[in-house]
Length: 251
Ligand code: PGA
Image (cartoon, rainbow, N blue to C red; front, side, top):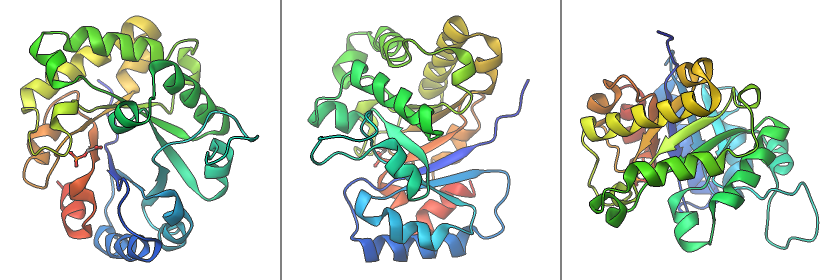
C-alpha cells in the first residue's frame, strides 16, 4: 500500500489581527524547525496572509486561504479569487468548510466551482465534507457524504485531482470538544476513500489524503493518526496556539 504523507492544517478562522497572526506564525516556525515527514499548513484570515507569508516563507510551514471565489476577477465586491491568493503565497485553499455552508449559503454547487477555480491556478483544495448531528442520528451520514463528494467533484476527472485533499469534519465535532472516536472517524474515512475509488479509480483513492477535523487536540491526535485511512488533521481551536499546534504536528 502507498505511503501517504501526513498533512497537518491549521484553520485560524476569524481570529487574530495581522500582527498577532505573524507572531503566532513565528512561534510555530521556531517550534517545527527540523520537523520532517509531514506537511504543515496554516490558514490565517485574508488580512494576515501577507504578514504571515513573510514569516513562514523559508520554513516547512505553508500558507493556505480559508475560502476563495470562483471567478478570477470582476465586479464581485468583497470577494477574493484563487489567482489573487496564489499571488500572495498561498499553496492551499480550504473550500466548503461547514461554517461557510451553514452561515454563508455555500452549496455543493458553489463548492464545486471553487474547487475547479483552485485547481486551475494550482492551489491545492482542502475540500471539506461532513454530516450534522441530526443527519448522523437519522443514519444519513454515508448518504450525505456520498452526495457532497459526488456533487463537489462533479465534472472533474482523476487526472485533475492529484493535489486534492478531502477533510472529513463531522459538524457536531467542530468546536464542541466532541471528537469522533478513532473508529467512527476511520469508518467514514474508509467510506470516503471507497467513494473516490468508485468515481475516480484506485490510483487516486490510494494516493488522496483524507484529513480528519473536529476538536483535534494534542491528546487525541495520535489515536486518530493511527487509523489507516486518516492522513492528517484540519485543526481549528488547537491551532491558534503555536505550542499546542506544534504538539499536534509532532504527534
Ligand atoms: P475545531 O475546528 O478544531 O476547533 O473543532 C475544526 C475546523 O473547523 O476546521
